[in-house]
Length: 285
Ligand SMILES: C[S@@+](CC[C@H](N)C(=O)[O-])C[C@H]1O[C@@H](n2cnc3c(N)ncnc32)[C@H](O)[C@@H]1O
Image (cartoon, rainbow, N blue to C red):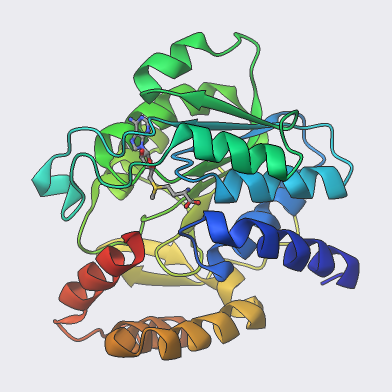
């Protein structure tokens, strides 16, 4: 990887880190998707911006890379809407409420008022107000639950440019299947999901912009096939996963399972589901 592009990542991750729930490896994976799609037309969009960290990160990178793009960040600022226990597991209404004024203040402090557009309200309402010609090269879906992910995908897919990337957080979350189910229903049963770090997956519903991506290397987890070729080429993702394993020492078993999955032994012990749910909840605090 180009040292200058790595420096852009490190600098902007450090600025965005106080405002995001995402781990560094997850942000890095979104950055890699931005690099892959940056020459395509269209803006970036984040469904579920919370305190703004990932949207700010993308805005800062857009500036540093000299891209003529903007970031649209959508959030209720009231936390999650009504959830369905069978699909959304531990996620509950009202979780992860944030404060619009503080987010606007942080955006101004980072000099991003012209790059990151905040649309406050429920997706169902704010998406109706979007300009008709909107199109997107990169989307980060981080709304956690089935109904919100479904609404987001229904809006997004017709407006995603060929080669555009959709990054789905919580798409490998044993405690909640809502995101994966919505993706299957809206993108199709034959999802070619690439496994990102931790619970993240990414997909190119209209074709992969990179012709040199390695041949798929599949692993099955939770009944879904994930292509892990990308992760295995990225020693920094594996290093970060190892670091996270130490950081979340009390949940090290989950990471041990995850690393074993990546290194080719998909026989997970039965209690990994329970531990994965627990780590998901820890992350959301
Ligand atoms: C996990 S947080 C997002 C974390 C954020 N991406 C970050 O970088 O830290 C999920 C967010 O989705 C928002 N959300 C979920 N469903 C929504 C909906 N239907 N309309 C608006 N906001 C929604 C919640 O308010 C919450 O802030």
